[in-house]
Amino acid sequence: MGEIASWALGVLLGAFYPRPFRSRVSAVCFIGVMFSLGSGVTLASGEWAESPALILVDVGQIGLAALIAAFFRPYLVARLGPGINTLRRRLAGVI
Image (cartoon, rainbow, N blue to C red; front, side, top):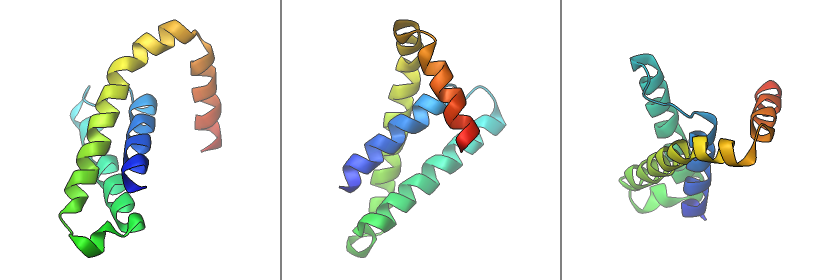
């Protein structure tokens, strides 16, 4: 369950944070969110009891999924049209 949550959170992070390394502040924020999500998934799934080093695995999965999603986001926006940007604006207003 933890692996699916890691990949799903990584895809969502990459979709809503499309250019994570455009500035130093942006990169630090992206890495901070990535580490907090990874440690949260590890704690929630109970993997922390097995080995604390599994945080690095979950952080890596979230980072990889986020970078893949950020890479494919421009293609999906062009393919799906303006509907995804409208959805993104609505979700940003709710959160």
